Amino acid sequence: MIRLLIVDDIASTRDNLQKLLSFEEDMEVVGMAGDGRQGLEEAHRLQPDIVLTDVNMPVMDGITFTERLAQELPTSPVIIMSVQGERDYLRRAMQAGAREYLIKPFSHDELVAAIHRVHELEQKKTATVVASKAPAEAAQGDRAPSGEVIVLFSGKGGVGKTLLATNLAVALASATKARICLVDLDLQFGDVGVMLNLDHSRSITDVVDAGDTLDQDMLNDILATGPAGVRILLAPISPELADLVGAEHVRSVMGELRKRFDYIVVDTSSHLAEFDLEVIEMAHHIIVLTSLTIPSIKDAKLSLKVLESINIDPSAIMLVVNSDNSHSDFNRESIEQNLRHPVALQLPHEPRPVGDSINRGAPFVALHPETEITRAVQQLASLLVPEQLAAAAAGAASGGGDDRSRKRRGLFGR
Ligand SMILES: Nc1ncnc2c1ncn2[C@@H]1O[C@H](COP(=O)(O)OP(=O)(O)O)[C@@H](O)[C@H]1O
Ligand SMILES: [Mg+2]
Image (cartoon, rainbow, N blue to C red; front, side, top):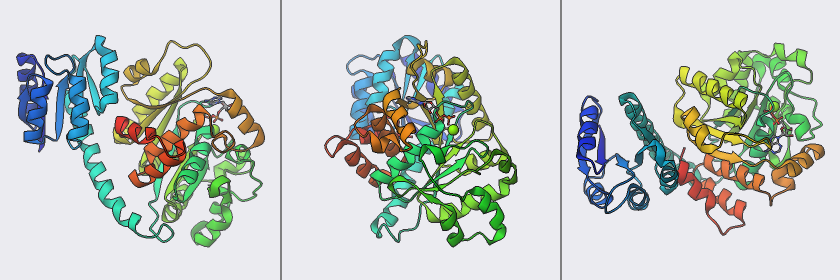
């Protein structure tokens, strides 16, 4: 049973919500309150699984309420309900720690889906904290690899997938003690190798040649080594060789990599093949990248639809906006509204460090640590790794002092 607390100053709204939710077999409204102060009291008394709250209320508004609740009762996540015109409040409420927001009027289905999403994420988090405790206590070297797959995905080419994948892998490796592998699944025109200036003749085609005999030693020879010790599985040296690589090869090599690495960052092409879907299905995090242009947002929408159609848990999807220098009518809010998914992070447009990095074949996170774009990638890294590694990432990202990345995790927590 998901135990819910409803906080709204309008009695009829509270009653309607309660009625709406009474049809759900796995939900139970355990309490109601008319303002934030009452809401806090009720939350402390009832310890609900999820709190639904309005924004504009007397005595204590929904934002202050959410902020207090996030600090005092982090095990009771908040869903904000707000009308269209209150976007500004809403943004502040998300920053205060709300997990989801619903724009009034919302449908019964939207409400139920939001509650399920938040509930599932909360359960997963509890499970991760428990699961990650044991290996953390063992020495880093002999701890079992966590084998988490992170896929970058976008319907459009040129939005910055490869740039982000390479820099993210290096940022993860520099900020944590985790074992990182980067896989170039843009089989025809993969350019991870040039981005990192790697002189290495072996690639995923060697995996195909190995067939059933592929083992950890062979894999070790096939993988290139990049900055910060990141190991890299390169794409074939020539586009026509891509056809030799089938879904079964990708499946088997991913299986081997997961036994050996903590995080496997996968760069993809914009052409969706069967093996991409398989990798997406095994992924713990799917980063959907979009720029601020209409075609790119349209493709992001289609990408999200595809993910929905194969039943990918929305909490595994991170929407990342890569800014470009063109003037755009879109901003973070309008993208969130349009795609009905929160934006986890926005990458700034920084042609100087990016251009320099590409020309020199080295990641900007290493060449230009003091730039906004590096900080953004480090922040993304800390959103992706479990708590104990995130702490290390936050320390490295900020030279120790500030805990921005950790706070960030609290904000978007997905
Ligand atoms: N945030 C950014 N700031 C500056 N330039 C960028 C940024 N993101 C992408 N670019 C430019 O866009 C190009 C294409 O990026 P790339 O990673 O190859 O895209 P994809 O892999 O999605 O096709 C990069 O080479 C870089 O020049
Ligand atoms: Mg690419």
